[in-house]
Image (cartoon, rainbow, N blue to C red):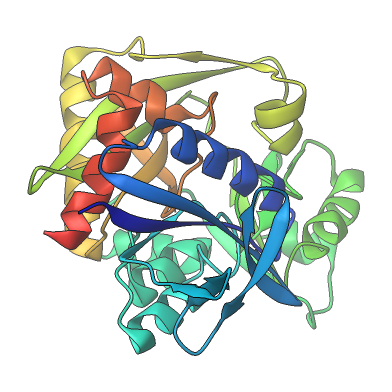
Length: 324
């Protein structure tokens, strides 16, 4: 019997537009012979099943929808939801409460990786190299001189919580610092300011595949802009993404081993993507993405394809790992 899969998308942040694109790709590539796919859109004021141009409200008591007098129950939630409430663990907490299986990491792992400062603090204790950084709270008094006494220019300024590089800036002059902080603060309660590490940026996807943790191919990000921000990723397409990355075999091996190690020590599930900078053959962690984009131009599908895994198999595997 075919399983009913709720492809959960939307969300409460600026990343909702990317979530909707990810959901379309999942719906397109999931095996129709095995799964009945339903698009569930989450908005702040309502959750609903979107079907044939109509909306059917989700009953939050049991995460079901009633269509034509028939209640639809779901066997699994496929998490195609970037930003809050999916990537920060809030939705996972709800699913845990009602006993709904889902294809992403759990509450704790999601909450940790959504917070960049927590991520680097925890992984730093396990010997993972990270950039120096400081965090500014919304209620803190912002003083450029105080910041620059701890972090030198150039530096990166971005929201401490969030993804898709929304609100991120590269600051090269002191006069730009305060406006960059204010820009980032519009996306959340805290801002993280990181030292600039000059090197090669790479990213590595990791999945649980047929019962084993598996690092996928590594992608090199070549910039046409100062920063790999939301516009560069999704609008201007101002980057060149090279899979596999043009790196040495020892660095490739080290990156894959480290990525699998991070996946295991954090206790992640599903698909994640880890971003690094390579400087003098040293890997510096940038961040961990617990629900990375899976749009037609996203990196995880590119990396899986190079590893010989089709989108159909990638998405189906994510579900089977949960249901097995």
